[in-house]
Image: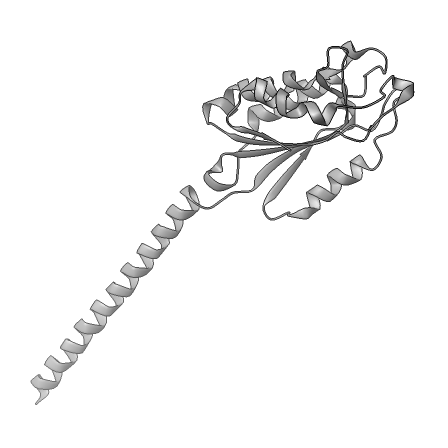
Length: 212
């Protein structure tokens, strides 16, 4: 009888030991699968590079509430979006482009597949003397379109940036640039900026770019 109890106890212990091994094995497998999903499939925070141009030369109307719009964007979805604001001191044409290039050199794409970067630009938009859509930054002169930035130049910089091209990054550019429907003091009777956007985007031929 004593030996029977011992054998019975030994059998129970073996079953319990196998159950524990199975439980630990299952837990380990779940952790490995979770890590794999986290590293390769879980969407990461999407970077949003944002610029609001507020200081303009005389005769160019103010870009009202643009800074507040950028701040609101940063509070929209903090868990899924990182807002990288372009400082006010980099609001001129060349300074902004240089600052943007530096940010793109180190930005980490996010979202599904970790391949998405968002851009938001709040600035005045207008057509130059050649009919090209242009962005007006802080150093823009109202009657000298040579001081404006043709939109296609900016789009080409995004298209040809080494890091974005290498990783086939998807780019969404949001333009809040339609606040001058007309302005006689600037010589703008009708602002065709919005009407010309589609052709400008098509001319750049960037399959990884969407402009809103």
